[in-house]
Length: 505
Image (cartoon, rainbow, N blue to C red; front, side, top):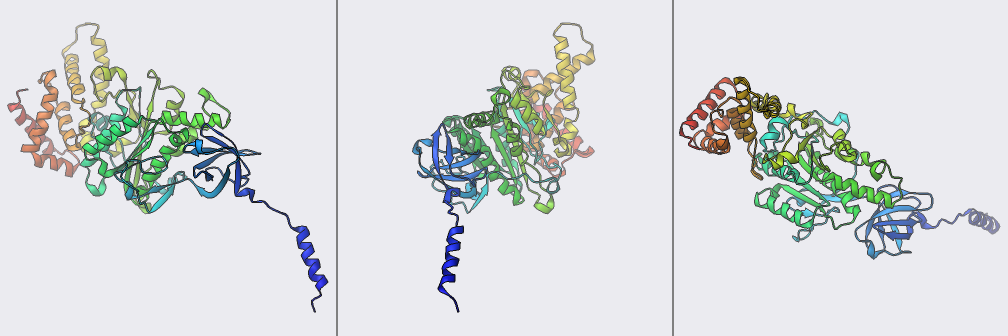
């Protein structure tokens, strides 16, 4: 028989042992807000990178966890938030919409459309930050990613899954190289064509609109996405944008497809992170950047890779852009990113002003893995090109002193001048790889030595048109075989000789 006193005792004991737990772990209160940063009391269980929601409907992301409060960045305008507002934990990390619905669209750093073409209706979301695939899941870079630029595809080749830095002063054509690489993907068969993501960090709105228009006009928007965090937006959006672009590309990589992501540029990304860190009162290091600025870029760029067949064989290629000040590649952020990437394309102001475009400095530029990703035909015609150009530059500097040169040196100067002229290329006119092979073959095998220097560009464009019309099967054979055997070399030499007979300049 149950006695009432016993029940009363049990209930009393339970009440005495009851520890009231206010739901401080789930909701907190804004202590301070301003400059895109908010300090919040009460979110005791919050984790780094967690998404939080403010009362006014604005989101934020936890970046600092201190003893008394947490520091969060506001993802949007902080004018809607005031002291004392309630803040709610979501228990989720920052996610963005991904999938084929984004192709052809312009979105912001949170994945919201900003092109005025209605909602995205994306069915899937991905976290913006994930741990990069490990060494077991990867395979070596061995498939070429053609940029359509002779100077790059011949001497600094890029492979799918590579991280190749584009570096140079402002107004040297860095964005132009990246856009040419996107436009050139049109020449790839549709099933093998990479999805291209252009991430604009801290650019002017007008610049982003111009990029979208260029891609549209060249038919490249049908396989591209633009992620824009413009200069007018808070630092948190500039910080988030490259990770968003990377997450969009990763979705395609994990499906066994290919993606190319361009970060334009990571200098502004590092500056936005510095701004956030200083406002969060993190200790400043060199050039006032926080101590983890290296990790900021390494965890982003390390996500670019070529997956092995077991994991679908997809790839994510990254072309980060860094802007230098007064050609100083030894500054803090440039050296950091150079050490993370698999090579760099260095664009030089002096070459740009001398009319050599793209203004690639072959001496400093390097691709650490791309050589294995070149097609054999390109290796055959461009094998000695780098060395020849280096020797030409050395000789040209020596020849300025006006000393008498022997015939061999004069011939080398003559050849070098024509090769430099041949490597020039107009903006937004990338060239398919088989046509690059044909023109470089003409230059490397001495077919241009007797062509006037001023007529080299005219010779090149005439030769391409001639081959397209009269020798289309020859270009097709180069594409199929991917190497120049003795028979193809002879046919190509005969075709060039045939064209020279009719060339008037």
